[in-house]
Length: 126
Image 1 (cartoon, rainbow, N blue to C red):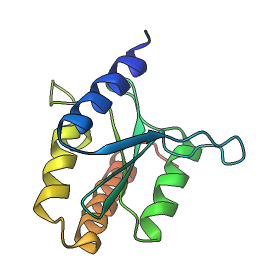
Image 2: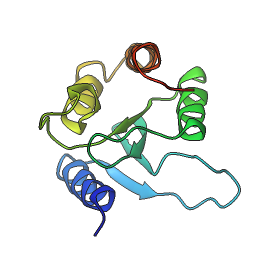
Image 3: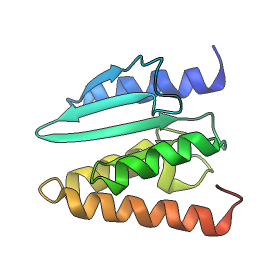
Image 4: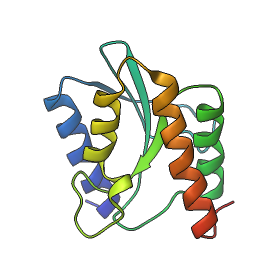
């Protein structure tokens, strides 16, 4: 299994343990769309899964930003738990954010937009 595949498997297992429904969406017409569509208790979340330490490709960034622009929580993760990588992009921090602000989707989206903005400012991201 690839490193990204291992992360995806662990992410799906962790989400399901927490009661999330997780769908891997197949869409041959929309390239760059996040890998997983997740929902629980009136919350939705799109997740792009990357290998540890890897970042989304430019088209994947574009899709994440399109979702956020339209008020839909979307982010990428490269680990389930913080393990020496940027903790913002581990699933546990995303779940804490989602649980803390579960009744305020706007706040969730705003925080995710800030994470992406910071990523763009500090890295070569399109």
